[in-house]
Image (cartoon, rainbow, N blue to C red; front, side, top):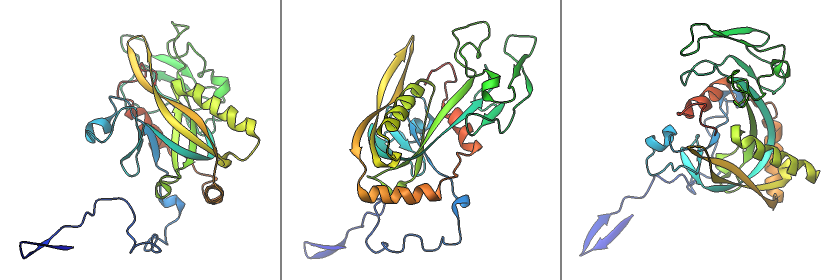
Length: 279
């Protein structure tokens, strides 16, 4: 674009950093990628940022604690956003107790019922400050292990949290950002109660879950000396007809999607202050 100033032509550089789709590209969005299928891509995540998450340091001033971060495009959705749930799943992960971040998981269940890895085994884990390793029995399935019960992280403390971590995973369509959809948001630890309330709400409506528009937002919470941001939700009416139609197609395409094990480990490693923080 050229502008005239004092009789001279000035070249004004056109902004090209926006993620908005230019008009000249519309209609050719997938050109060049037709040979790839869904197995060639990862379903990206939305993270509720905590003060010590690495994104807050890496994207200083852009990634803000208490805001929702889209890992696929490294963009903030703000402290609240609208989502249309497409599918809900749950998983269970067992990490070694009292271990450094990044330690390999002991057991993994992608359906919250059966172990895919590490099941029906006795895992011996070295415990800091103890000469004897701790033996952890995973049992024939998740329920049989008892590792979702309180008091299992530290057997000497009946009030200690569960050793296993339960995740509720929500595959979402973002009406305000359709080009960034679908995306997975996980609720776990102190957000499990919110997840179960959301599940109960959607069940009570007796309609497909992708008929719902949900406003997700964050709220600061605290316990003892710890502060963190927790998930909250507020029903926001019915999905629009076009949103329902889009998510029906996504439901077919992603009906067998899985949050891969690498992604599960990344969730653990993103909690940079460890399991003692309840978020």
